[in-house]
Length: 167
Image 1 (cartoon, rainbow, N blue to C red):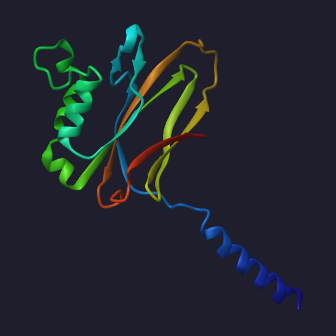
Image 2 (tube, rainbow, N blue to C red; image 1 turned 135 degrees about the vertical axis):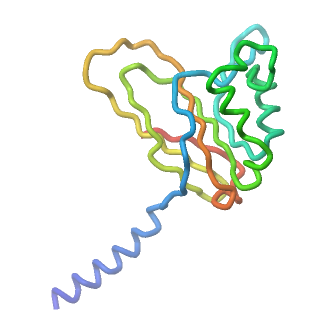
Image 3 (spheres, rainbow, N blue to C red; image 1 turned 180 degrees about the horizontal axis):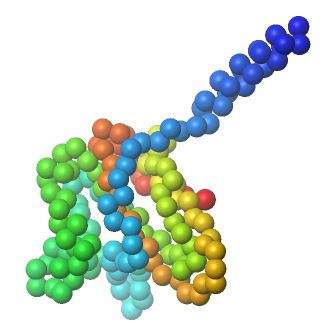
């Protein structure tokens, strides 16, 4: 009798956990490096770019213009940077089947950051970034880290918001 009750308990318990695990969607990290996507200077202050969920080339170009990113301006020195060259590869054909995530966050030299999972939760696309302290002695100055992440439109059709969580 104990074995039967234990089996029933385990069976029910295993089904109750299936809702807790979001398998996640496939993604490709195309750029993972120190950097800033752009900034604004409202009212004499400084506002750095945060995150974006991009669904078209026009939206990408508009975002670059809005945040002072010169990736599409041939007359700027920044035009030949690795990031600018990458951003210009995302054309109308790319956006027919894919979307783009731009994730920027502040971190430190002694911290390793890696995308752990990307999942859809109703209308939210949730990027989970795992951070780990590196061994050794590190300086504590902060800097910005930038990730360009490619995802399929098929997997993100219901998405309207981008959330970034850190573990």
